[in-house]
Image 1 (cartoon, rainbow, N blue to C red):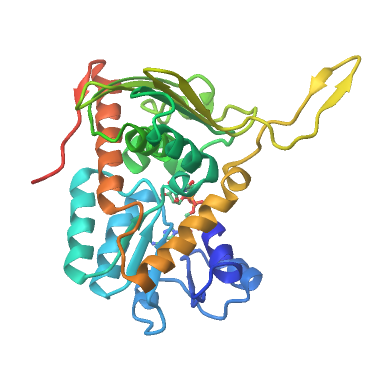
Image 2 (image 1 turned 180 degrees about the vertical axis):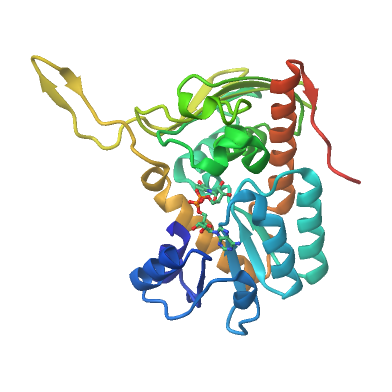
Amino acid sequence: MIHARNFARRVSHARLAALVDPHGETLHAACRELEVETGYADFREALADPRVDAVVVVTPTALHREVVLQAAAAGKHVLCEKPMAMDVRECDDMIDACAAAGVKLQVGFMRRFDESFLAAKERVDGGEIGDVVLVKSLTHGPSIPQEWMYDIRKSNGPLAEVNSHDIDAVRWFVGSEIEEVYALGGNFRCPQAAQKYPDFYDNVAMVCRFADGRQGFIDGAVSVGYGYDARMEVVGTRGVIFVGRKEQDSVVGCSSDRGIVQKFVGSWRTLFTEAYYGEDQDFVDCILEDREPRVRGIDGRMAVAVVNAGNRSIVERAPVRVEGRKA
Ligand SMILES: NC(=O)c1ccc[n+]([C@@H]2O[C@H](COP(=O)([O-])OP(=O)(O)OC[C@H]3O[C@@H](n4cnc5c(N)ncnc54)[C@H](O)[C@@H]3O)[C@@H](O)[C@H]2O)c1
């Protein structure tokens, strides 16, 4: 709905032609809100609609590959939400299908369009902190996962659903590939999932070694309750850069019984509003200007490779090498 609202109300040079959802109530509510006349229960109907030039794929992750392959075959440009897919083979299929069809494939790492992340990258690239040595990135989410996310086989767990963004950001800032990871996972806050989904973890800590020896650290959590927490620290040979804020707004309350009180950021929806808009607008501009998207299939693919290695590391309790890019 974040993307749909952007395309309906803000993105220039594009029109929201149709919405798709097999769940009738969801579809009708969305069509009503966005004043879109065409709603399809099956995505294949949208792909057959000649008015559709491009699609945004926001189905649960396990369905991304199938929708993207069929979109490419129908000649539609694709913005696919993260995580790109379930494993690297699926990602390679998607990259190859879009390349063969000559359509754009952009992956939904919207932090690459966020003003603060972009400003930090510019300062790092400008040499302000010397050479990058270590990038630490954390994302803690407040919400209780949806049922499909508890099932690691259907979602690849919080490393995929939450930390894909951190993996991409760390990789983007270091500018090299993650070669090896060691991850620890545990379920500390979701007892309701423990029996039915014994593999589910709601907290993860993962260290990463890059191909050139530099270091990354990723910290992930769901159901934290206190707010949406997304922050990064870039440690260099001559300094450090911090990215991300904790405060929802600039309102500070102070009382004798509670001390200083300020609201924590509530949701990624508000924290990254402008970043989502930026990625949606750039997707359309890429198509019109016929240029490569800022976040490409290979970026989505490398993040998925790290997710899979991290999940294996949790199970095997050992460092795991990341599956490299195919030749
Ligand atoms: N970039 C981000 O910050 C961000 C944020 C949230 C979710 N996501 C990603 O977006 C994807 C969806 O996540 P969500 O939280 O919105 O999930 P969700 O379960 O809330 O929504 C998925 C929607 O897809 C619909 N759907 C299911 N099968 C479908 C099909 N075959 N065809 C069309 N629609 C279908 C469902 O009815 C539902 O409305 C996931 O890959 C998730 O990781 C990304």
